[in-house]
Image (cartoon, rainbow, N blue to C red; front, side):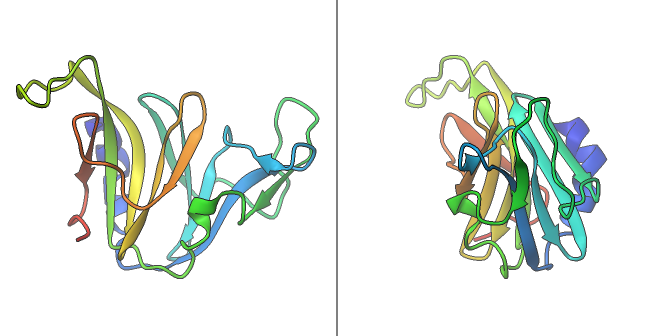
Length: 168
């Protein structure tokens, strides 16, 4: 996680205080569903933040690398389009102010929360935005992106390292 934080931390911290003005995911027209393999695009403070985390330890955060006015492509012949309504977690994000930014990690291996032993290793598993009284968590969901409205759990399986002050 420290490598990603070193590379993207300053830019991610700079999102705090800015309003989310747009969100996009890819929709598969033929299947009438969200295509979770491709990135999620967030427009915040005039920047397009592109996030993809579809494998453990493989979080990609880039800026202004995707033009959502052009059709996305994939290796097959699906008709794909950028849409703002691809997932319920994105419904209430636009118009909210970013109040915190952090990385989440998932604990691998057996844990014993009662005995105080934690997981064998922590692996990078996602990016979280605090958005006032809620949040948006973009996380590894196996071999695709997962989205959750609200903040991630804080327990023996997940932990969040805030790059900014943690939202309350």
